[in-house]
Length: 318
Image 1 (cartoon, rainbow, N blue to C red):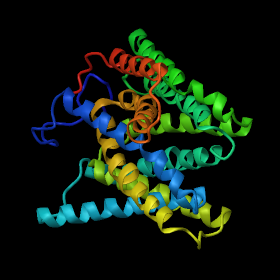
Image 2: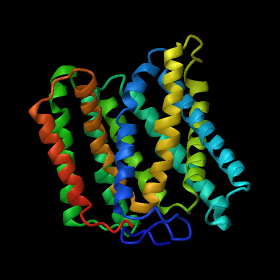
Image 3: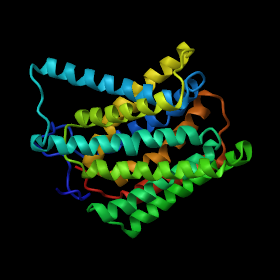
Image 4: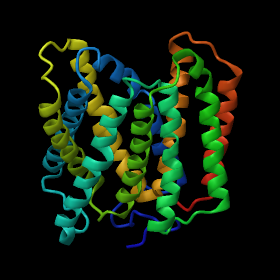
């Protein structure tokens, strides 16, 4: 299996003609940033009356439901069951994406949810900024996306932009406990494992891959929630709606884009959402919440976008 960044992940037979060109890959990356950068608002509403474990469980199980409905409706509209790529490796693909869903999706969700109880968002953002670093290293050793000076410079520029963006928050919300920081760092590394493992996994249609991934993660978090936390019998309507929206957009729809984009452009390219999502979240605050626009936000924007451009200069994504 060729996992190099110089080779297209989508064969002409598997993709319609409009799925070509670098522009679509960048558009998909930006769409991921827009969705994931808006996720924290939904989480804040959800955890008001739903505990972190049950919020993650509800988010993933509802996401799996939406993906299953997507597959059923697609099959009905097409008048047939769409065959996915690689029918001879269905069992292997099931194991791969179940592992990604449990170890590299559900577990980091839980780690970050519990880290947030003792650690400020700025500190967690810095910890999460290790995801592209870890992705670059893992991809170098496990795939054909080899580490280069240009790519490392781009990653470091993006990380510097992230630091510039969130550093002022340290004085406002403090740092965090050692345990919370360690949980966030481990979560970042698990995200990087998921990035690379998704690239290495047997190829299925992205919607089917996403269903296995989200469904397995939801089953694992359900077991954890049943053991660790009481069922939220007094959840508010606002928290329930937030949980369902989290399942629909940042989980089901975004996971489909995530899998498709990693198969197409590689894990390092996708890992830059880690730097760009906080930037978008900050922009939402400025545009819609009346927050002030400061010089460091502009500097962070320049550094992050320049880092993404440098690290991914002239990639052959088509």
